[in-house]
Amino acid sequence: MQKQFFIWALTMALATTISAQTNLIRDTSENQIQYSQSLRVKNRQTVGVAIDLLPPIMSATTGNFGYSAQLWYGYKKIRFRGVIAGFQMPDKLMGNDDFLNLKTRATALIIDYFKDDNFKGWWYGIGCEMWKNTITSKLDNNNYNFNDYVITAGGGYIVKVYKNFYVEPWGAVHCVLNNEKVNVGATTYSSKKFQAEVSLKVGWHF
Image 1 (spheres, rainbow, N blue to C red):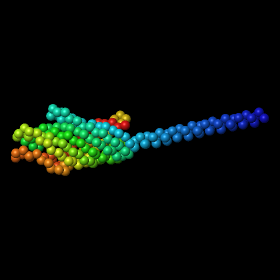
Image 2 (cartoon, rainbow, N blue to C red):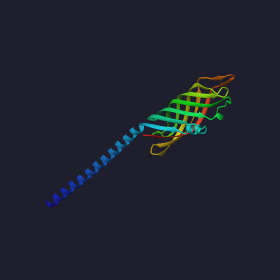
Image 3 (tube, rainbow, N blue to C red):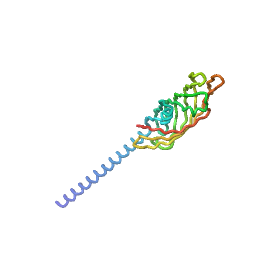
């Protein structure tokens, strides 16, 4: 009788241990699945900010202040960017010796597509911009305003440096749709039809 009771008690203990281990494995597996699902949902959408280094550096060479800031929203592999920038073009790059001090304030809306998840790696984008320009004529020393309406296409590569802090080398080609001109006497200035740029951005997304 005692032997039968001992065998029964041992069997129940083993069954309880196996059941507890099974529940632990199931709970761990469910937690891992929930974490993985939560991570995927988190990476599906995000908000980020970035600054472009070209406008402040280029403006600094002229002794002026420049800026460029971007606020963006990302969903899955798509990024929507709003951009504001202000800079002064060095006179040597203007291509017209009769004018100087070309200052531009730009706003843009751009849509990008990423090849990889979590907003890293290669991306390609297209968008529209408006440039509000001011330029000075050497002939009469007056300032003149004109606007450019632009479509832009470009691409870049995001490298995550620490968590979601990143650096982003990029380049773009701009096409000026209108042909607004500044006429002073016999001299004329207008923006080039096609323009290209390369730069580096630094940013963070949540």
